[in-house]
Image 1 (tube, rainbow, N blue to C red):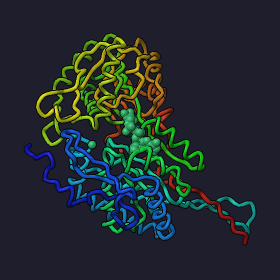
Image 2 (cartoon, helix red, strand yellow; image 1 turned 90 degrees about the horizontal axis):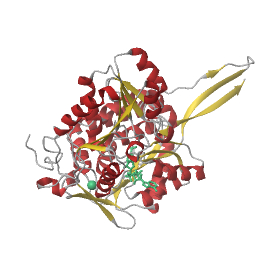
Image 3 (cartoon, rainbow, N blue to C red; image 1 turned 135 degrees about the vertical axis):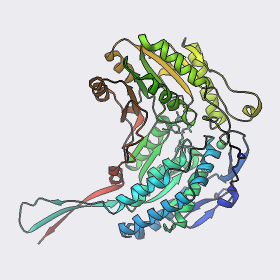
Image 4 (cartoon, rainbow, N blue to C red; image 1 turned 45 degrees about the horizontal axis):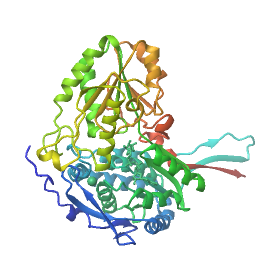
Length: 489
Ligand code: NAI
Ligand code: MG
């Protein structure tokens, strides 16, 4: 494959330099200040975006509030058609969307963006939101429930997979008649801006989707603090999640949160390692480990530990690392901040006494010197109380822990503050069922990683991984409030 770093994408032709979207207008920040968005493989500047703050958020919320009554009263069938039109444009521009995300996040090219499929799924739900008729105690009374939108919803998006996460939050919100203000991450806001542009082109009315770019403590903090925001959605770190929840508490606003994980992959004695090993490697090198679902802890019985570690280490050695446009499996980390975080954990793991099997360093020399590249790393003989076994690293760092029996495996699996997802590798259906029930996680996969092959699987966490479920057919109902109507004849 010979593509240039930009893959021929003219970002300035797609997006206006220094502008975000408020109502119908692409405008600079009120302050006039901008943030440079860079390619993490080269540190080249891709585009500048506004450094929005409270005034910009206020303008966006006002635009969303102004658009709300007409959008609420738009036929759900028309909203479905508009979401379908947006899906169509996202399919048409699937390569551009994916390329832009690769450029700003640094991940390899994964093929055309999957957002069109999510939009099509949600569009199919838009005109199927129903209430109930209620049993009545008297023949002259009719009771029913109807589902209504909240109004202006705020969505704060992280930088790791901005396109899919934005659509996962925005599509069900607008399908049910809400309007939204999106605050993308400062490190990767461009895909979100392009998605919003395509939404406008698809005919979704101005003001239904607004995007304010800026830093977390400025634009981000202003969004849940705004008194006209009626519902929030957040994906990111638990620490920031707490701040957002505090702001929501002050305004008594409901929210859903997806806050990452420390997913256990429980490998039982009868596991098919030929299947498990590629999945384990993929689960922690995907997006350079910067995935909430990353399979960052392997739990293995002592009798198979040496074999598993040797085989995973061999596979790690074959992972091709480099800039996204080359034939690679793993790109750089997103930023200097994330690189410092990951390198910090590589040091902590060694200080804690875990055995470094492979990796452990920043990659240097040639093209590596320009970006935030680190080696895929395995720590063996990790104890459950070590920080590398407890904390979300958000890098390509795998911790291998051993257990002596199923009960201990479950205790280790459940022994972190997180509970997003888990994988169980076994041929024994009975043990698979027992462990699937015993694991504290919002999603469990037997003999695989993730929910590939399933359509509309609910996604979300237990414990500090958050609450609320996205992606499923029911998630659309979370963006509605239930009203009881009683008619006395
Ligand atoms: P973060 O949680 O601070 O950032 C996520 C989003 O929240 C960004 O849009 C950011 O601008 C915004 N934000 C930050 N501070 C805010 C505030 N005070 N009020 C409102 N919005 C605010 O995460 P960060 O610093 O980028 O990454 C740190 C760690 O968080 C990662 O290493 C990873 O462990 C975790 N994380 C988890 C993600 C997930 O998918 N669950 C995604 C991104 C980060
Ligand atoms: Mg960047």
